[in-house]
Image 1: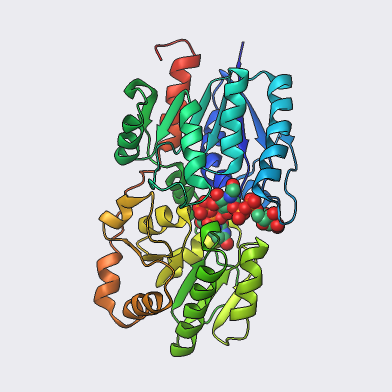
Image 2: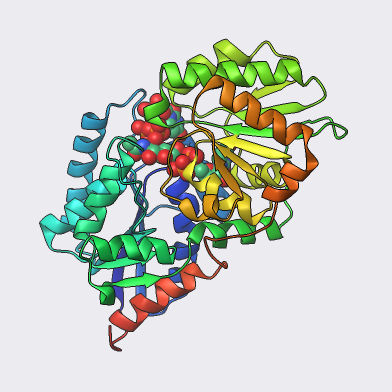
Length: 370
Ligand code: UD1
Ligand code: UDP
């Protein structure tokens, strides 16, 4: 008899990072895989599922415009629990640190269902930043039966939180699996760009940056665009209204600044490859860009992904206007500064993370030693 495994996916980055695990589990004869989309994100989740050819078996269709964290948490908890009660999975898997993941871990605890946490052990050490993701990670880690840590550093964080070493596997990050597979297909950006002009790529969405910090970021981006008419700036804007409103108000009138809807994953990978460098507060981008030898300036003061900072391939620049302009201008002007960051070092994995995760589950469920 096959074992029912439920993979829960809520947002864009979870879909990208769970896709390799879902695709690998589909090929396992012992596993009866069900994909549950909470649809905490709607359009951005659908974009990723479409690229990887994934159909959700169950869709909670949770997203509401301008959803608050308490409303989101309550709807997720109720919807997820109904599925857990009905489906009675042998194990549940979820990835990362969103509200979908936190409620999944807690919901599994309430129903005594083993939970496997993909991308376990990341810590910034500050519950306020990233908010609320650091708290979500801690909660997910508390209730996980299997901790799939992307790096040795993440494993150490889990050991420091008194997690048993037997329950931790260092697998690499599944985002590198997704990235290498996508990059191999040689995707196109799908946006008309001037092939003669260098490209700077931008993304931003962190909650703790909303308001004044994000106003400063946009003012810095506007300054950079005015100072550098020979560079084109491409910014696929996150649909969160707190981001959209400021981004469009501040940046839409600049001739060399392209604001657009979120790019599908393949197009975004093509844009990351093409970019001179990236300015971003995204977690996933900090992991992907180093593998493509593209430098990243991170719009944060700390990161739970210190491996890339230590390797010198990403740099923390915070949200201060002057600092962002100075660091970006240095990368634009100085090829040596760029070369020093464009090393092609990938501290987050080798593209085989999903295989390792599935091996561990197979060993458990197909009867071998756990
Ligand atoms: C969420 C996660 C964050 C993750 C990010 C990835 C939480 C609390 N936050 O932040 O950890 O890094 O996703 O992008 O789990 N919206 C749309 N269409 C979409 C997606 C979002 O319109 O496809 C709009 C809606 O108005 C929605 C709002 O964005 O209410 C916020 O979405 P939400 O998932 O609550 O927060 P994010 O900022 O996207
Ligand atoms: N991404 C994408 N299209 C875009 C911007 C980003 O497909 O227009 C991808 C990116 O390659 C990365 C992921 O989305 O894999 C990051 O998602 P996001 O920044 O929303 O969340 P985070 O990683 O910060 O949780």
